[in-house]
Length: 191
Image (cartoon, rainbow, N blue to C red; front, side):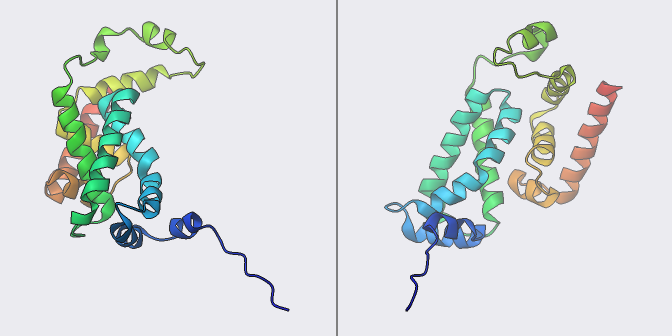
């Protein structure tokens, strides 16, 4: 008597695949079947949200940018050449979209004009924001766009220096040097 073999859901099977395998499957499936694409995007969605939120300073703006990134990946995956990793390509798109968003945004929030008490008082959901976290955010926002990107990609997205260099189209040594200088600036503010 043969027992039926329990089959695992396709999404679970896809989730076990690496990025390269998922990209290959998604390229064959899109635009009509989106399973591999969805698994791939779920893999990176939270990290992209954290990164873009820190970079843009707004959850709402980050949601908009991440949505745009996902659309660009959906429409551009067929043209992805694989010269870099999917992760690097994805973060390059996120970086470019974030820079575009910052240029378009006219009503930039000036965090220096918001007092710490006002900032903490707006916490309506009971989530406590540490005052040091606010200060760190202010200090990071004082960095230039490239230095800020490097710090956010390294500290929030936990990307390797080589990945950051590829995303920002900079040399590895330049990224490491700028990262160290940015940390030195942050350390001076902290002290």
